[in-house]
Amino acid sequence: MKEDYYDILGIGKNATAAEIKKAYRKKALEHHPDKNPGNPKAEEIFKKSAEAYEVLSNSDKKARYDQYGHAAFENGGGFGSGGMNMDDIFSQFGDIFGGAFGGGGFGGFGGGGQRGVKGSNLRIRVKLTLEEVAHGVEKKVKVRRKIQATGVTYKTCATCGGRGQVTKITNTILGRMQTAATCNACSGSGQIIDKRPSDADAQGLKIAEETVSIKIPAGVEEGMQLKVPGKGNEAPGNGFSGDLLVAIETQDHDTLKREGDNLHYDLYISFSEAVLGTSKEIDAVSGKVRIKLESGIQSGKILRLRGKGISSINGYGSGDLLVHVNVWTPKELNREQKEFFERMSGNENFEPKPEKSDKSFFEKVKDMFS
Image (cartoon, rainbow, N blue to C red; front, side, top):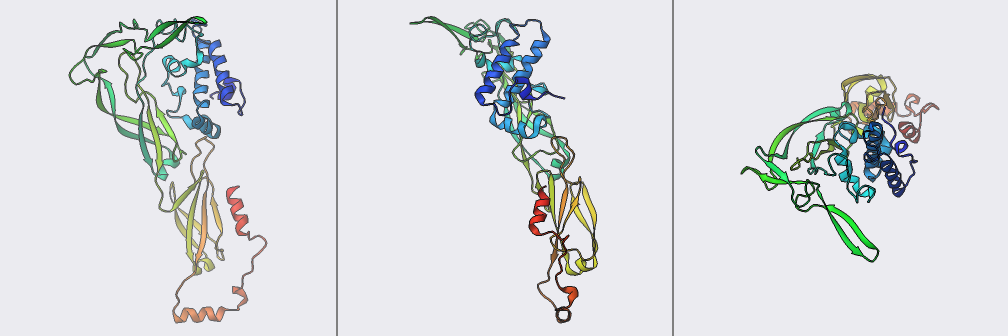
């Protein structure tokens, strides 16, 4: 079971953005690979801290995590899926370390301070049916992404010497100040193109179409975003690929309405069916189900079919299917029908006699949400 992100950073859930950043910097500096060479435990803590900060420092991701926990980022939603490495951490959060390690560089880790460049992310939308949302689904989509062209060769950038950074020393009133910045010549990759074929762009990349498999967990909601690591655009040289970001869209169902993990179904029956009782076949996300309606059932009755709703994204079982019974009153009657109801007018059997067990509309709504 994955550790709680707040516990990893040693903070409470009400921590401010500044407190989250301060806690991460403390953890990262303590367990930085340059301070703990050859220590796999320190490296693991370093990565976990970066994973926690990557989520908690982003207001949208933090809100999703607070609501759904780690399940919000399953199937491609964070560091834990294997899509990020040390270069990822340094490239995204290097500014947090300040000059603690070689003026903003990362010294002896991963090859003399050289950092690979990450390719750009790609974004697509995937539309799901209610049935796919309820049970989860694996989608195969075609993605046009940039990949390195065959035959491209690179050489060490002469401007930065392969470090990906250039150092500047400036004389100020406070003394000599040293700053490090990304090399403009190689965009931080430490390499520049030596040879490239005619079908490659200036970065040695070309467009290719690839079929990508996306595992979508049950219980996702409209607007959620999943991440497929490494399926974005590739980066030139010794860089690593960006990610494929998948925005979830959901289709409306003809008869079922979703509310959280529960589903609602409006069932209309005739007056005679309400009086005599009947059985009806209704829609559910798992297929058709048949329910029995007892004689004398009242309009507004809510029948709860437990476990027939949406699977929880947190893995806490499934919601329910709530069937709302509506007795349909005919708008037109023939002479014989009208005479029958006229004879029944005033009949005590047709007079409303609600029992104490018959809940009011507001009580039904309260039960529905509890």
